[in-house]
Image (cartoon, rainbow, N blue to C red; front, side, top):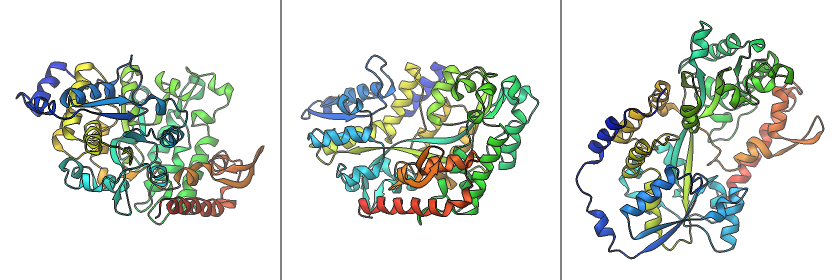
Length: 454
């Protein structure tokens, strides 16, 4: 599986897309007043690595000589991203542009500039899918800019299924076909297992069997964890665990049959039929996998989308330049075409998909990303499911952290995720607690909405 095709062919294609005429804008830009924009992002790697984002910063500075980009290392060094931003805000040293772990804390802490007017007449912004634009809008105010798009789902080891003379799962496969695939490919004594872990099933199953429920049952009305869809999904996950079809649920003795010390290593070594991951893994797969693979999403064929966002500080003195830079690094057509061109020339992987409906950008992207299932998944975005972690108020508490008051093993007050995982393992009966969990999840969601004035 080769992501990067012929360098000559792609470079020629890119020249046709962006034109061969000399860009005279650089000379005009050089006459403008010099400004400095500070930027904080966890995706910059080290200066020595010089990853794609750092190269894109260099390209931006070359195009706009009057704008200098200063990387804010203080936020990057923080163990918790939001804590780093909070410390910067307290010290009146908020970066002009910064990645957002979640949007709601940025609103609650008054960090974010209102971008509604700036984006209103931006043709590139209008080409962002409406559902993505709306996800960054609260009470009709645009607080963040979509920075990238990732798809979540299963990848399949095609070679392993072919080796066992089994049908290779493809995008649109059913839940029954998923169950059959993980069961048929599993052979613990020979170091083969169906899938890495069962817990993602709790999130995707409701959306796979219902057109009205979203990720983790979330809808505009809140969570529906007491629904049959969610309970059936949890019981389905429990069945896979009970029968030894998931690597993480195996005993240490069983795991000793595999090549690798963790699910990632087992997948890379070719001992796993399906692995749950995002499109951010594509660069690593391209470099490290020696077998044929494809992206097949979730059963049922709905596409799961996880969006990244950037914010501009409310205290910035250079709002227009900050917007221009953010656009270049994220959703802007010119910037993304340059990103593709640089990725080819520098042999750098493109992690994730462009967050635009612009046909030239999409054609250029899929010219270098030849994974068949990925294009199929992208074409189904209209009926997609958005993973709510970064934009739904209170989601971290509702999905993981809220204490339930229920004892699980030696934990007298297990949080939501611990209690749900205990049910997947068969340690507790989910029907005894699901109404309580549903009420708690919706309570935390409501508290999150109130914190940002919704």
